[in-house]
Amino acid sequence: MPETPDATTASRIRSVIRGADVFLFLATKDSMTSRWCPWELGFADGVKRDEQIAIIATRDASGNYYGNEYLQLYRRIDQNSAGNSLSWYQKGSQLPQSLRSF
Image 1 (cartoon, rainbow, N blue to C red):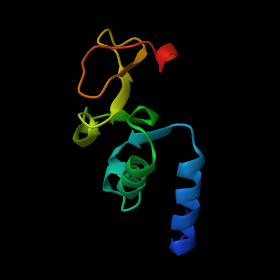
Image 2: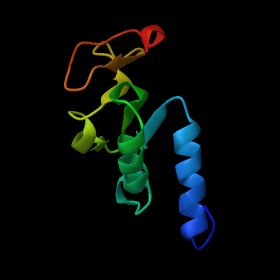
Image 3: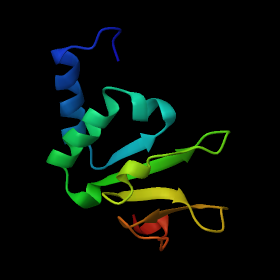
Image 4: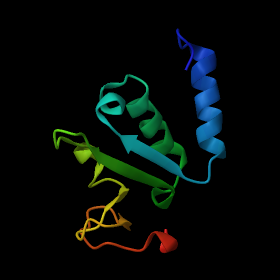
């Protein structure tokens, strides 16, 4: 991001999102408070199919969990219940799926 984002910045972001096969939203403390990141997710929602968007929810060192707002709306990538590997989950589901089938 340039120091002062502008209309050219937004145009570039739109172009990259349109051209991507998949849009992954990394939900961190900073991305959730960013002015741009939620806008990018909203733009992706308008131009991508549901199966092309996934949220990667994160936890910080204090155990705070980020991304809850979006977990019922999109697929997510997260640790499985055993906590030893990553899986993906259909929107709203708690049933892990192999990342190979993503």
